[in-house]
Image 1: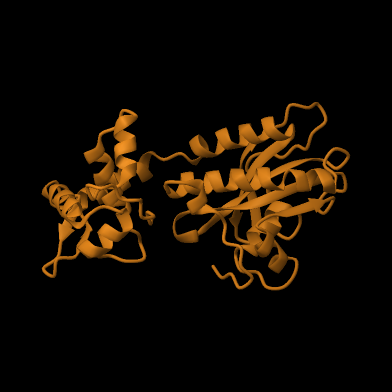
Image 2: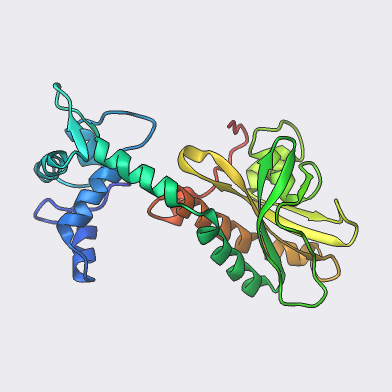
Length: 263
């Protein structure tokens, strides 16, 4: 997880921790967490200069925090002065993995989507050459699109499957266009009377986790309505991405929109 540099105040510290303290937080704790969040899986070690740049904190502040974290084994310093995460940080990660339930993060987002759209919302993951509905919240209307949680569906039919294929690196069209737009809409592709709009959900290091979608009867979800809901589904996908990846902001997890995307 990379943290973007924060503006410095006159004393050499970052302004965000002070804002957190003013809101009831503790500046030292906020700064220490920022140091830990500077690390990512792309590099094992960070120099003091790297940590200062990634956190937006002065070197002397970073050094003091790093030494404190090292005393409790959250960081380890190498002979050349570079730092890496310590065993205590790994223990926290293991505890998180052991107790994590994806539904705790996904279902509230799906419920909000049903409120915003008036239609059903689902989260799909890839399993081989199929997509499986991992979580689902039905819309409030009597006539709606029904999908059972755990149901396996084709990847190449419907917006959620097409999105998964696109951001798994599937070549050609429509996948190139999906990657450029960051979403896909489908009208009657898998079922004649069902339409949907979908966007990708990412985890750490842009690893594709699945796709989130809004679906319902084509009589209500025509192309114009699906396009209206495109930004809604993208915001929800971004929200899920940063929550599942542990990033600090939805903007940090916005899906990449480039034509030569590769997993």
